[in-house]
Length: 364
Image (cartoon, rainbow, N blue to C red; front, side, top):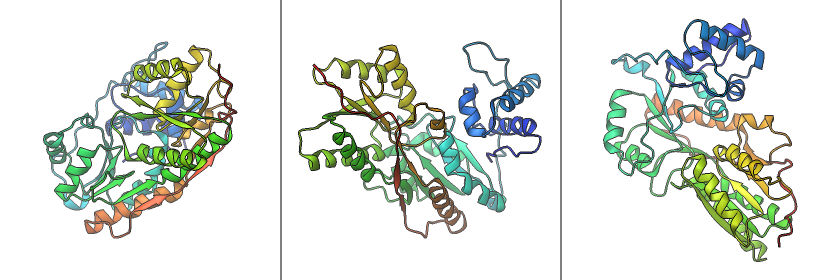
């Protein structure tokens, strides 16, 4: 179970939470940076640093060194091989070893309600989401992690198809691929893409770039659909340029290099993952490119650490409380009945205005 620190003895509670995340395998190999941890734990810098000092003294983590993240010394404890059926956990299956703060918030109500039932929420991050045929690995995974229900996050088409065929109690956090018949709770990205497209066109942008992962997710497809609808509606010759991310900073940088060498380069960039954001900004800073003076920048999904941005970042955010309750209601139905009774849910997202959209620059 992933907990957030209580407010009494906050330093010790923060240290205890970090220990729990380490033993549960949510944090592996190295700790995230302080900015990320501070947002996820919702504590101040001084509290976090004192908690990290406690973990260092107790040899849970190695001492900090300049420019390097702290390595974790204690490995996660093995789970019991046999658990009573009534106590089986719910497993959150994700390609990311460290969950984003927004994702943790979205699972908060699920975790609380599972605790009331004497169960926990465990995070598992196997390196299988890039595989075209992960069937063997998934079979082993399900065998070694007996679960009362599964939540699939940022999952590939083959992973979704395998769970659907097995008939396992499964909920998709996000959108299912075509022909995958599984219940889901997702963010409604098509209207957001349409809204953004019209907004950018109103600012004079006629070349709009969009980043997406090489393995196309349904959410990114819906954003693209909304953007293309806006371009078609405007009917002013605007064009959408697609760029691929191979889940590395180098691939994002290469895409930007290619984009800015185009005779008619994009004057606005749309990011479909928060993971694109830091690489995008750092590349632009390294090239002396100003946001929004030289290029406008919008990231579609929300995350907790955006509040640290200055000037404010243009993005889209769901009603996190409604999203979190929607997931919790359906996970509890899976646990208690083996199936989801409620209809699948598409939660609207709203535009969070910022200072990263500006008029399209005049290009030579």
